[in-house]
Length: 254
Length: 336
Image 1 (cartoon, rainbow over the protein chains, first blue to last red):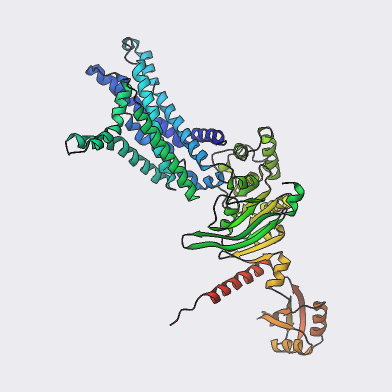
Image 2: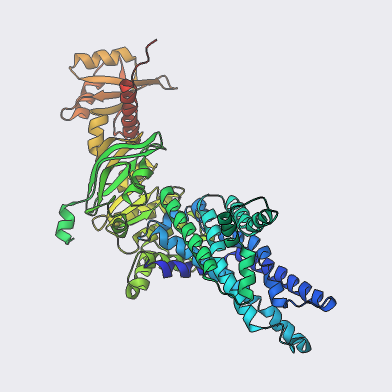
């Protein structure tokens, strides 16, 4: 692991000079800006009890589905197809260090993108100070809870991207695999829950498991200030498992 | 390892090395050793197993069976330690196209655990050795020509002053000037590093290497200096003659004069003269005797006689042909 920081710095540099990073950032911020504007506009027309911040973060899955594949699809698949992964492995560094550095680079950038969305309420407050008087735009607790959720769930989402990139040489296949897996993980849990609600007779153990995998429920809890350790465990353990598998796959493919 | 011990013990020792990809055997019981400071060339047709052997020696691929010792360390047991001793330039020399040359070499030097205090000097030295310091230092790798990219790959292999340098096809795609530059570079490394390189350009290998290992279908078919290989695969002295006369008159003349000679090839030239390739078994100053014997005859006239030195290409063809024939002989015959 002594090469981790060298590789991590290199990853950040490569992300900063890669055009796909900026494409992902522009798409993300444009879309999220539009969503924020739509939420504020909707609230002007029909006042709602839900805070704009809570509403804004409840659509987290929309950008996640395209930003995570764009950020991670190149990480291992691109390096393997161009041969630079081979060159990297001629040095006394380990696959674990390579995988963790790739993960860390993408994770830092992913969180940076979300932090940049804080600019939306700040700009609104600056441009429309009367709207901010109620303190609804920048309420500390839901913001902190939502960011905590994004930081924890991000571990799993980025790990899925890195894992998808490890199993193939093609960046396109990696991107598609990552998108599909994220879709199943985020939306699939809710769909299974809907099936359970219709009373198709899931056992209590299955019901508990399905509830445990409810990502939207986790967000709801976090934004209301309920910090449960179970989601932490779910996201971090699954994320670590996927990173471990990615490392093993790369070692086997060498 | 002390320098004296380093010089006496082999830098690379390979025993019964085998690597299989499913049903395909890429290399099969390969054995060889390389002394410290030697420059060894790997020759072989495409798919012969050169790159597989080099990848195993550099610690990035494991062998199915057999053992390889690099710098006194077992590759299978401690590939990370082996990587500290080896500078490896892979085939096609993959490089990140978005980085600048100096940035890339600094990054590689850090990964190769060059101490921070020596990092800049080490990178500068490698760039100067490969003639990159003045011309391409700040250039983006993606904008460099093929020759300069090869130099970046070689500079990378030299970083950290490794004991062993392995280069897979370092001269591929280079123009004659660049090839000459790389030849000089390899000459500079002789004695200070153990160098293994593979190439398809046979004269290059002959000029640059102390020893040649010819590999075909995963087996070593010949190993030794160019001189040793000539003796083994194309023994005897060969001569090219141009005569005016018939083939039968030359062969009868040779047999009468007691020459142990064989006519290997004959071709009629446009000016009605005959060109012959002659092989004479060993023994003293053959050229002079041949001139004396062939020039004093009435049935034909000798126009020219020149000794022929077999090229490494001919040795390579003879060695690979022999290995093919052996493979065919050893194949079990299918009964009708």
